[in-house]
Image 1 (cartoon, rainbow, N blue to C red):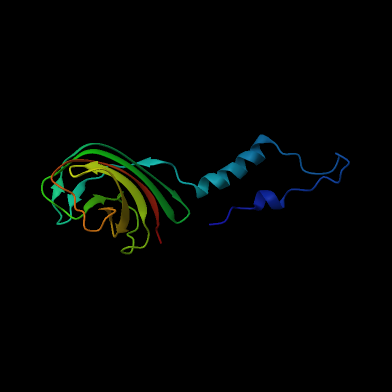
Image 2 (image 1 turned 90 degrees about the vertical axis):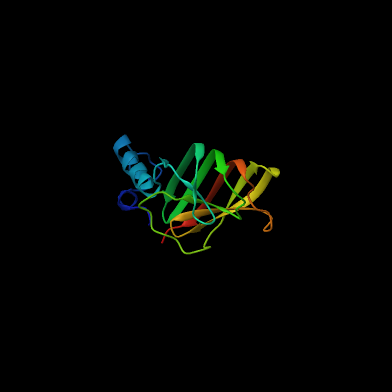
Length: 160
């Protein structure tokens, strides 16, 4: 969505005499900032629940998850500690914020950093799918092992 340029179109250039032209005041600048604010959504917290690849809900110790929407792009950041994985699972799923449009499978990817049993610090990737955020380890043949895991993830995807 483009900025509302009504304020811009009303401006008059200074002719160099310092007597002709638009003087900006706080009200005019505030209107400009309101236009920018309308494009950039606030940082919003959300609480996710985690699931194994077969849909079993697993416990989460603590989490900090935020997202912002800028135009039609959703940016997210997650820190989740003490995810108790009960059995070997190829990937984990997090529930995305409620009320957002679902996304097509595999449209965009983000990155994440994870640690847990069997690996100390592993890069991975995230992929949105419908209302879920899939978390994968970098090596396709590496699965999440049973035990406590920690995840830091960030990325973006298009909400159309």
